[in-house]
Length: 516
Image 1 (cartoon, rainbow, N blue to C red):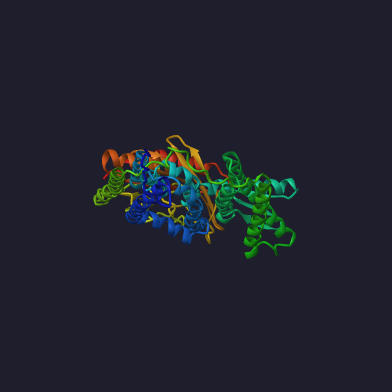
Image 2: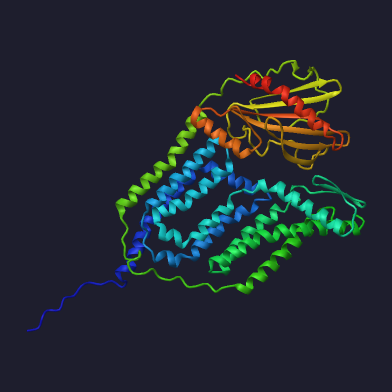
């Protein structure tokens, strides 16, 4: 007797291939909704990056980072479709750390860390909702997103000094007589200065962005990718020194007719383009063909199903993590300003310094954006003159904070003043930042520092950390800047001794004057 044959209905696709599609529709929609919520809640942070991309030539590359990211992810759509999304608690941990960093940065007023924390929340959200296996497939594109954060301005001064060092040393090696003062130097044929546009930071950032993309598309080995990215950083830094030397030599031998105007910039970018083409050409010798996306091993994810309850819990927890930092930030923003200090320095300071009723030394002033209170006083001791400027901020907030890139001694390419040197100097009481300015009629030696709580510092990073600690422990984050300046003749060391003597007599009266 024959056994009956059992028939089971089948579809045109195996079950294992149906699951990813169904899971992706649910998990993908959940991810997009959460990402839209993240973008809406932190629109100010995202917009702050976009505004810098739009207005800054240095960071204009950020405009192409999101489209390139989407294109890189699209290239991996086959590998992504082979995995079933699986929410992971690791992503929630990442979101917690990202928003903790955003909160601390918001309290300290560090915009770049806020932006980094916002970007870090994106891969964390991918891990939380879609799973770490899916995040690993697009790990490089997710890392590429961080190149969109406008950062690196702190490299400006070191790069300017390097360019000046390289150019002057090369000219001297070639036998040219060169007089240098800070980032300014003079040849018999003319005067030169290394300004922000000459630092090479734009070339460096552009090279890093393009190099990181080229390394991903051209190599599979992590070591080859890392080596090419390192080369993309080192080559433009070294090449910028040769670029500056080339421009000076072109101008010198053309009797200052070439490379002194718009063509100065054109020659620079043409030179940079040639250097990058050479870098890519050399890199092509080690190019590796792209490996096909390997299907996941059985049981490694393709046969798993999406847990809807787990996805729902993850979405709710992620939404809660989105909102907590903003609620705390709103609470801090509603706090009133503390009572301002009197800022009344005495008429006489220790050491024989007498307050002068008029500030007549110069009309130069340091630039501080929207301080809650500021004051400028001039003191004399015989023929010696010192001016003190105080800028107090009762609470750190957007466009009114002690540590801000728009607070400076002098702007680049000022029509009257030039910055000819800047360094940190250890004085008797604490380190100070020393800046030397010159104009056609006067030279100034400037000492400045910040005070957060009762702690003096010249470090912007330390000041930001002190603000965050003060906000967390004491609920307030007031601080102020102290700027002293005096005339200086050339490299006369007496000017530094004069500022040191004045600071010694100012110490105790200043602490008292800055009390509320």
